[in-house]
Image 1 (cartoon, rainbow, N blue to C red):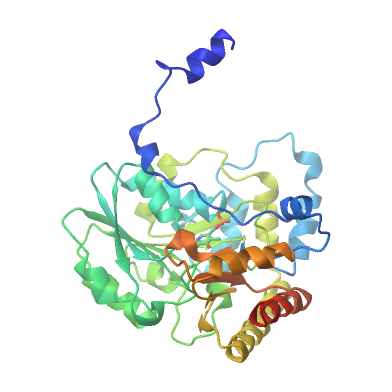
Image 2 (cartoon, rainbow, N blue to C red):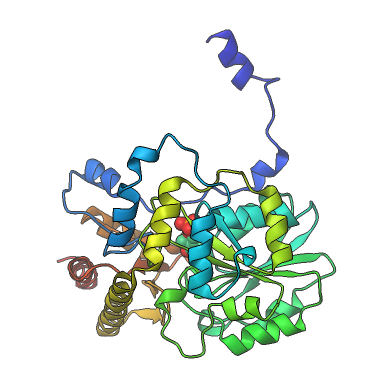
Length: 377
Ligand SMILES: *Cc1c(COP(=O)(O)O)cnc(C)c1O
């Protein structure tokens, strides 16, 4: 072993912050190439990361392609054009918007901006793991509040969890991984009941897929002046997950604080341009929504046929209860080239989360579910 290696890894080497021991690593969906390589399969269907089966917005691809020769330039640090486009699209002002390197960067930025050690945050359970990640990274405390019957939000339970140390309430609607949502009236009741000094983060990453009339994407509440941050992403319906771009909408004061902690060149040039173009691509959004609705209904019908419990979803995935051998079922389906997300990491050992795919992908999935139900004959 060389001298440098010894000082990096041996005793007496540099110690990481203690909080790292409290973090659980994010478990992403297995990439397609890995399953192809491991199993020697050509045809692999990935329904594990809530990606858009129609691919990226064609308008976004065209806009990004045209900028490839400009890659020697730094991106616009303030994302001026994209913020203008989002302002037009949402009716908010540019000072109420921040653009980030995926919605994930916004989540950690919120934690970095507002959390001191010892502060508490409230998160529903189960939900997206990144809220706890950002919180723990800042050495703040996570208070988990279980969702109610049928994984529905229980606003009273959330309010009961508020303490003197509560700083942030993280909400995800539709919620990942359950697909359930917080009705607009319930969000207002929650906002009206909280004492000042608590920031509500309303993660609306899946808002475009919602068909319920009493849903809100939260932007109207920002306009009304409530102290909440709404998160949006270009990774889901716009199909730009690989570029990493999302945004936050919030009162000006909150945005100003977030900008103080932001890296200058956080969003790359291609992402900024592609996102602005994607916002104008109504045909792609509409087709994506339509395909998703068809896929959701088809999956519900198959669940009923096979006697599987499912949670009605407003997102582009459905949480299904496969029972005590759910983990093994996931492994079996993986051996047939179908990648799903097992619920273990969310404390749901009998569940699996399935993203809605293209018609052909859903055919493959449904064949696989029937094959499992028939005892894999
Ligand atoms: C996908 C997702 C996001 C944002 O993802 P990015 O790719 O980082 O934009 C945020 N919240 C939830 C709940 C998500 O599922």
